[in-house]
Every structure is written in C-alpha cells, then in structure tokens.
Amino acid sequence: MKIQAPVSKNETYTGDVVDVTYEGLGVVKVDNYSLFVTNALPGEKVKFVVTKVGKSFGFARVLEHLTKSPDRVEIPAKDRKLAQAGIAPLQHMTYDAQLRFKQHQIQSLLSKGKLDLTVNETIGMETPYHYRNKAQIPVRLVNGELETGFFRQHTHDLVPLEDFYIQDPRIDKAIVIVRDILRGQGLTPYDERTHRGIVRNIMVRQSYYEDEMMIGLITNSHTLPHAKEIVAEIVDALPNITSIIQNVNSRPTNVIMGPITNVLYGEPVIHDSLLGNRFEISAQSFYQVNPVQTEKLYQLAIDRAGLTGNETVIDAYCGIGTISLAMARHAKEVYGVEVVSTAVEDAKKNAKLNGLTNTHFETNKAEYQMAEWQKQGLKPDVIVVDPPRKGLDATLIESAAAMAPKKIVYVSCNPSTLVRDIQRFAEVGYHVTEPIQPVDQFPQTPHIESVTLLERD
Image (cartoon, rainbow, N blue to C red; front, top):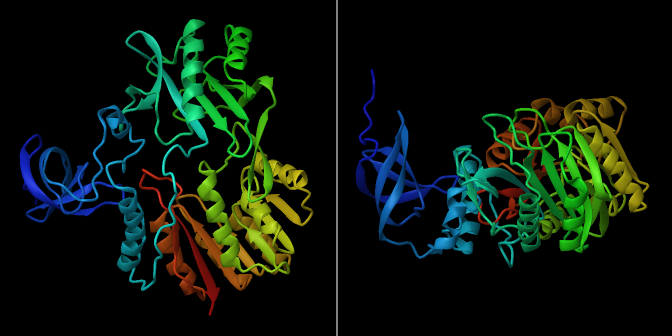
C-alpha cells in the first residue's frame, strides 16, 4: 500500500524546529513526517517551502524565521554563496552551538546503540575560520570567462568565489592571482560535457609553520600552453612559492588528480611541522588540513596511549607517518602500515628527515598486515587506529584483539562507524575506559573527529 506524505512539493507550511540532523539540517515534523530544513535551528518557528518529498522524509528550505534561536548567526549577503556551495554549512550557528552540536551527535549515536558512555565537550579553535592549508578549486567557464569557485550543492554548476572563509587567506589570494594569470594567457577551462578544455582545477598547499606554498595546475591535456610564461608570472606574484606542479588527469572522472605529475618550478614537495616533526608534503600526500587542531588531536592520542618510552606501538593507518612519528618520540618502537605505497615511501623519508630510527613501515591493507604481524609474534602495548569514514574492517578488530595490546586508541572521523566499532570491540573484550573526546577539526562544517580509549577487560 502506497503511503501518502502529509506534505506536497512546492507547498508552503509553518512548523517548529525540534532537532538538527548530523548534516546540520533543522528537523520539522508534520503529522509525524520528518522534513529536513536548511538554515533552521532547534527552537525556531519557521515558514518553509517543501523542495523534495520522499516516502518517509522530505526536504525543505526556510522562507521566513517567525522566531529565531539565540544560537543563530546572521549571514552577511556576501557569504551566502558559501551555504549554496556547501563550504560552510554550519555558518548560521554560533561557534559554541557548533561545538555542542558535535558533542550531541556522538552522544545521540551512542544512545541509539545502547552504549552508556560519556562524551566530553568538544575541543574547539580560538579562530574557527581561515584554517584550511589545502584547496582544490574547480576551474570552469562562467559567462564566457575562466572562473574559479565551488560547485553549488548536488550540482556541477560553478558558484564563482574569491573568499572561501575556511581557507588560509594566503590560499584565497593565490587562487585569484593564478586565475587571472590563466585568463591573461588565454587558457581554456575544462568542460565536463564535452571533455574539452585545458585547466580542470587549481590546487594550493600552504605550510603553517614554514612559509612555503605549492601551486598545482590539474590539466586535461599533457601539454600546458604558455607554461614558461605562466610559471614566471606566478613566481613574480607569489614570493613564497616553493613548488609549481602540473598534474595530468585526462580521464572523464570526478577524481581530481591523475597519475602523472610534472614539476614546473622548484621542488616536488613543500615542508611543514607537526608536534616537532618536519614533513615532506607532495601534491598527492594526505596531510591533515587543519594544523592547529591536528596537533591537539595527535597530542590527545599520545596522552590517551599513556606512553612512557618503553612501549611498542602499531599505527594501523599510518599515511605519511604523521601519527607514527609523533608517537615515536614517546615510544620504544612504532610499526606503521598503509595501503598506499607512495605514502609509505613518504613515511620512511619523513622518519629519516627527523632522525627517528625506531619506526618500521609496511605497504599492505591494515587488516592483512595486522594478521601477518600477529603470526610473526609481534606484541604491541598500544594499537592506534585512524581509519577512513567507513571505519574498521571486522577482521582488523579480530587481529587487534588477538595481539592483546593493553590499549587501543581510536581516532575517528565518523561517529556512526565509531559507535559500531566500539560495539564490535566489546565482543572481543575491549571497552571504553575514559570519556570520548571530540575535537573540532573542521569548524563551520558538520564533520566530527574524536579520540576514544579502549582497554582490555
């Protein structure tokens, strides 16, 4: 039997906002039917228009705020594009409210999972904007001109932008400069429909502790017309430029970078520091985008691990070695595993760069390597996991438990998979022993990082 929704698309209604979703959308109920409403906060009464109707829930946008929450921030007209592009979806919330929202999201998911655990207040930033040290900005034709900006949410329509609000201002400035140089040299932007045009994206990486910048031009073609002139103009306009690279991506794909990278100027890497370790960062390195909060996150992981200098540590998703090297300064031995071979090579280089001889890195899937180490008789005191959003593979949890470490430190970027994995760890004898600690790595967005300590019964 077809269930009829109590609302219709394009119709206008009035309602009270009773909750907020993990994406930061307000929740309004009409006859027990949930509508997810943009730019709406709990406690507000809103007049809204329905934009999409589904079987069990729908979507809407606010036409008028009849009452306003004390947690509301009025968005200046110039910043409304950020909401359209999904760059800062929580910018309409005060920062204190954003921190409470993130704590609440974890607490709510724990409750749904019937886990009676404490979640600490979210550790925030003193300046919760202009924090990102990396940008990958699409280049498209808008009104007959090469433009940079961001795609309108759920579309591939480019919204031209010059101030991205959450990026290091030096990056915003560099994007505009490079955009104007490309315009001046007559380069054509990429067209997804025809798969023609030269420039697909501009990538910028900016060191936080060292004044080094990398510009990446991601091109559809192997050749970059006027490359010498473009490089000379960029170097002249940006005195701190350390590296200019061309990355070739000639495939019709949404993946930003391709397999070929050519150095057009300077070095193939820039350098930056985290917790006293210096890192080489290439165009394709995974490196946390918020250096201020990353140091808090990693220090928290070290503290929860309780390292004294005598421990053997496994870092199960080591990347270029950021957590491994931070732990290595406080542990006896650190073993890292990562599936991306170039990242493992970077991790080895970074260990050498910092004079750390107590690290060992392997290229493998974490769950396979953990089983291999287990067979070899490796007995870690601490296992650190920092998995992608999909969380941990069940076999990794089994292998980790079989190695019987005293502690497992779980650095999570997705509260829902964290909750699932806490339940799985409980089945193999590991339980959360301290309050879960959220850290706000991505202010103005719904993304939530946290550190959880699990110990053996």
